[in-house]
Length: 343
Image (cartoon, rainbow, N blue to C red; front, side):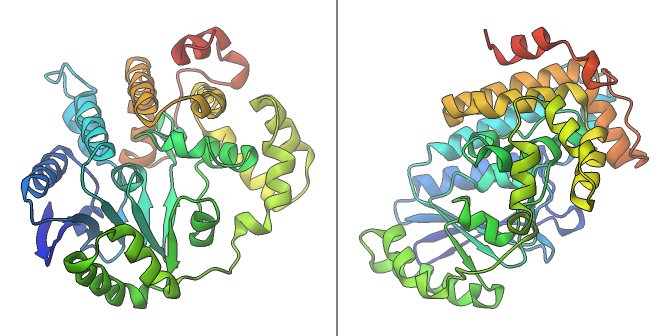
């Protein structure tokens, strides 16, 4: 599931399950933990680098098909959240990892793959990066503590990204401080050589790497999100989900129609949860965020929302999920606030 390599004083961890686009399952979590522990104990290793051997990207996220068959539809698996708990414990370990971590974001970079790498000391993205957290289509919300970072985006963009799982494009990532540098993919191997070389000599490794690779940075560019910034602010900087929906319905353009169609296909309860969680997340630490994420997942497992979301999106692929709550009007606001512990 992974390959490891040592180059000078850098421990490289390559996700290597191209047939599933590095969908993260229990075995991969165990292998990553073991590799990190080994590199932590090796006094010669100065930094870790996460990368991928899959041509299409870093990771498509968690292996939700395995979760569906091994846990959600398996009556012999009493602890339905077992995989999520194990994954989140790995994320917490990475948050506190005593050596610098560098990550390479390229191609499809989603869900659990983001959670694995977003706490890195240096994130290198390139022009192919397709970054998204589409969990509201699956019966839960952006998890693996990524909500901590979504809550620090501008209000309208944060709600747009969190509620409907909208893609962030490469230039968006650096403009919103989610990645530290944006490069052209053809320059990555040269940058990797710089990282490996500096690991032998640098006293302040991350600082020196950032300084030396700064000349590769792409600093200008646009994206659909930048082009639609005014529309995103018009519709998504509202005081309730209902106001967002009403605003989208009033507009007569493709952006509004497409956004409304996506939003109305999401789990209404989890959409309400994510709306409130954006504001709550500003007050939480990364660990508090991931603990809350697990509570929300447990709730979605209990109600059947996650099972139904995965079924509709990834198993039957009919995209016609029948959510436990059928509409925004039927969402119990007290239940939302109880789940989020909002008084």
